[in-house]
Image (cartoon, rainbow, N blue to C red; front, side, top):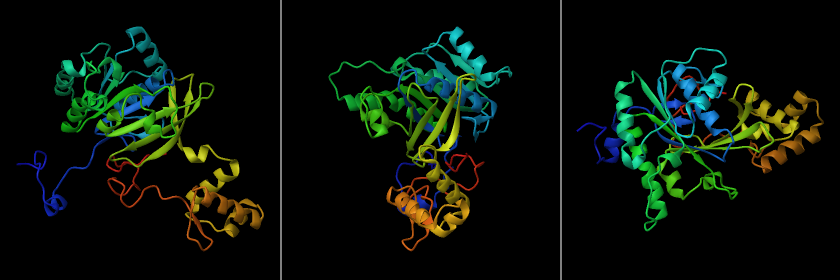
Length: 334
């Protein structure tokens, strides 16, 4: 029995096992398995999904910032006809030739009607299969009679895709809508029951106001560092671009400068902050205290302030994130 098929482990055996690292289609955002990309209608999630698909197929930079390894991509554009899809693709390419590793389907059977069989045929014909995008979930979701558990129905709707992706160490991104009702917990904004999030390995929630080009991408998952990233949308190119940590871009200029200095120097005292910025020592002390109280930075309690730790000691990550080019880190390269 190989480690891949083994189902019973002692703790010692598990720790000693030689298991392959998790493969990421996009570091820090899209691991192998099933990722749910969620946003309200017309927020730009299909533009984001198509841009990521292009980046993976060409070995470019996802969201204009994250280097990705090239691989074959299948995009199920189930809400778009060929004309709209062509126009979007041409806009994103900006005159560049299309990558040979990107293929589209505008019609496909549902999850309960053999979708994974179709994906298997593509996987077997592709040279280096890496990513499948299903846009949108409603087009492949099985119908139910309403007599069972809504949670169980939702979980079962995604489980075949999640198991298929995990079995083949591939990434599947399923585009889905948020609920109309607002919720402070972004994970609870996923339309449907919590069974959808429960069946997913990662959930990405894209949120922005209708009058703004800027957005927040909230990220959580079994093998991801939970984070919120700031994005901006270029309407001329149809492209989303990663700006960085959302907390840095949703704050005052003074606090933004403190975040930048903390990232640059690793720690600050009020005196050091005053020297670097020219503000009064008393104001620097008050600013740092307020930021620590608001959980915008850490403090050792003795007058030194530190950037927030990017992960807890028990976070399910794959170790050191210092090498942004390592596809096994789960970190986001800015």
